Length: 132
Image (tube, rainbow, N blue to C red; front, side, top):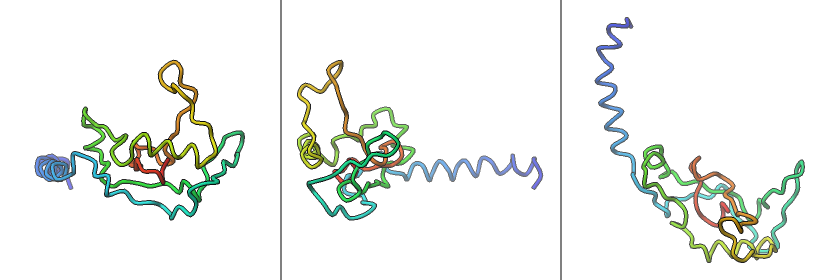
């Protein structure tokens, strides 16, 4: 294909790309989350260490993704994914499962730790307990 033909077809390609993006969901559907493996334990979770870093127990935190976390959603200035599928109170149960003390006043300059997602939210991770 010559450069001239390529340039001539570019507006058509952009039109199809725009239509595809318009069809993408603009909000996250918490019910669309998919676990990567079955969580086989809900307590007595262990944190194995690898090269000085604590890792989540795969039997408690197998990870999960959400296909509705798309590029369109991530680019939306009002993008918010946290606390859509689980509440802060539900997530607090994870401290107990890992036998960790839940720090009080764990915010701002007083924050001493943060529970994180195995699959990052920005990479399409789900905000569900099996991913925290």
